[in-house]
Image (tube, rainbow, N blue to C red; front, side, top):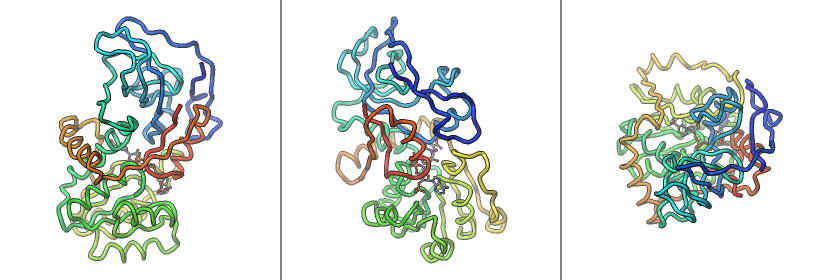
Length: 325
Ligand SMILES: NC(=O)c1ccc[n+]([C@@H]2O[C@H](COP(=O)([O-])OP(=O)(O)OC[C@H]3O[C@@H](n4cnc5c(N)ncnc54)[C@H](OP(=O)(O)O)[C@@H]3O)[C@@H](O)[C@H]2O)c1
């Protein structure tokens, strides 16, 4: 069976670092299930493990990629799960995985499509909710969100709008920006490649930015720092610009952290499990009522996984990027 792996640890990810190799089909041991892969989640955080061969899952030891998978149980040697159940778990990028039954979560029958648990009703949506919660965002404040149309940014924007905030974003290209204002509710969105980025951001920010929801780091963070209001809060959620290369630009505007008495708070969603239930309650309600728009860019075929992953890091696609098998 075909399975994706990394050739070796590497500093800067390119397609040559990935390989599709043959592995023996997995067998379910005691307490395990066999899961047929339906969706593979293309998550930016995987780049760190890809580059270093070290991830939370012990399987990363030999460079074999392990990420979030949604699929169906096709064999069960675990009492709590039956053939046909839809589950989410961590697995190899391959058509079938053996997983400990205890390590997967059952997907509720009313979740349609089931891939939602990889996006709005999974880590992306929860991350948006947790970041806003920790920022103390209040009605009437201005929030700036980078990677505005990605799965985290698009949910953060809609939640912030529902809280009565002025919401501005940055995204790669005018088409993404139009999408952000026309469909996701952004009051303004600016192409981060625009020559007059700083002027346009300044105009959109009005009296200044209270909360920066930072998904990119480097140039995006740098452009935002002078626009922050005194004692503004920066929520450092992600570092997309650092994922392909180990050599991103340094901050020219670092000094504004002091000049404007800014606070910068990094957060890792996994460390806030107590917030998952309230987050999911609001997200589920938003999705099921149709108030929360959530988009997916789906590419078919396991063979396309590495290319599509790199394209996602480079900015191709809108919303959650998924491989469907
Ligand atoms: N803290 C946590 O626990 C946690 C949990 C989940 C995700 N995250 C992080 O949250 C961020 C957003 O995640 P996501 O899943 O929604 O990913 P995403 O926004 O869909 O993907 C990353 C995006 O970053 C933008 N980007 C890449 N290089 C850039 C550059 N040089 N300059 C400006 N923008 C660039 C691209 O969008 P554009 O085309 O719009 O530029 C790209 O699509 C990621 O950094 C991720 O690692 C953190």
